[in-house]
Image (cartoon, rainbow, N blue to C red; front, side, top):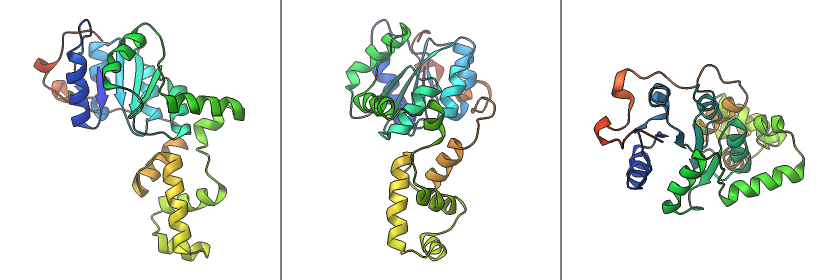
Length: 232
C-alpha cells in the first residue's frame, strides 16, 4: 500500500509498482486518512512518501496489529530526520535522487522478507551517528540546533517576523535570515510554517495514531477499481 500527501507522486508510484509481476498494490491514500485503509487491507508492506519523514506517522504504522514493514521515501537528506525515521520504525529509507525508480520494486520485495534497503545519505547518517556516539533519545529530540538557533526558532514559532526577531535579539536582519536558513536545513523544512510544525513535532510526544480515521471508502487516493489485486 502507498501512502503520501502528494497525489502526483502517489499515483506515479502506484502505476510503477502495479506494472511489476508478483507485486500486488491494494491502493493508495493520503497520510491523514490512511490508518483505516491500512487496517482494512493489512498490507505486508507500506510505502510512505513523506518529506520530511513524520516520526509520529511512522510510529503509528509500526504499531498496527499486523505489523506491516515500512519503507520510507523522502526528499530530505538531513541526517537527523533520516535517523529519526529509522528509530520510529521504518525498515527501509530511500532518498529521492539516490535510487533508481526501477529498483523500488526490489526494495518492496526485500522489505516483505524483512530486509532493509538504505540510500547512501541514510548510510552516511548512520555512520555519523555511530561515530558521534550519541544516544537514540538525543537524536530523536535534538536536531542539532545551536542555542542561538533554538532561540530564533522559538521566536519564529511565536509568529515574529525576521525584523522583529532582529530587534528583539539586537542583531541584523540578515543574520536572522542566515540562522533561519540553517534552521530549515537542519529540520528538513521548506519554510517558517514547516519549521514550526517540525519543531513542535520533535518536542512533543505523539498522541493516538497520528492519523485521522477515514470516512468509508472515500479515504483512498484512487478509486478501488484502479488498485492492483490484494497483497503488498
